[in-house]
Length: 335
Image (cartoon, rainbow, N blue to C red):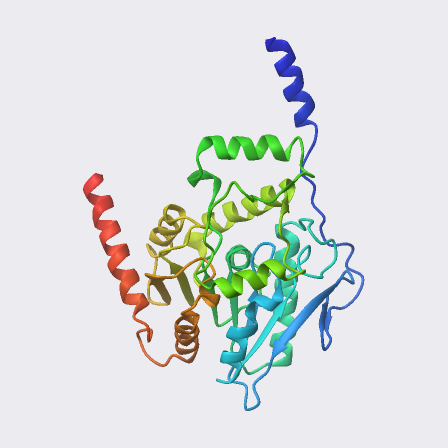
């Protein structure tokens, strides 16, 4: 019996989660009216929202897992009226980009971000450039900032970044993921009827996402495995993140749990705090930028980019400080 189990395990482990990375770089990257053409010739749909007046800042936004560039439409319209030029693209495997539903790999996602950042810095040579990432997009940005090849930017904004690293998951969850990824990596999981979460209190918006054909409703096991690798990388980069940073998180986020998020923040803030702002919203959910009270976060982002004051208009930074101070105190008592 034991021998048969061992043979089955060996057979299963022979199947590996696949990556679908970029191809050979054989051309110069460029930006068209509706696409970001990469160095390997991939056409990634690109949306932009430009101010009608003078451009004061440029913001590149990265969507979350299974989402696409349209996620930033409403925040971008608000910010563009304040002189902030906003750009968002469908990352590979998502939206209407190539290889829909397939995981391109961390290196490819980072490389695409680096290239587009360089192109927009060339287009706006004297304008400050910022990066914004929601969920998976935030993890891509955190991981990218640890690369020597990443072009310098004036600041990064992380909206509920995907930080649920393996070391903060229960052992049975990581074990099941490994087995599934090495046996049935092609299997599509939807979570329907099993996972009960509330991504936002904006029900109308959630219904629109459900009916949006460009939002992926399930995920291949190998893509979830790749996302977890990315979250590991982002979580481990807490100490090496030295850029001007604004991090937003909602206390009602049940997609990315508090434990890994607060653990990341404690490490992240253990170094120089002068250029780091954390905002925690008591009624915020995972899709903070699209919640019913999302405009509060847009106002905070605009104020932070514009350096309008030392504190955010919402006071969410003060709330975050109170939470993290208490958490640090409680941790010291336990130790």
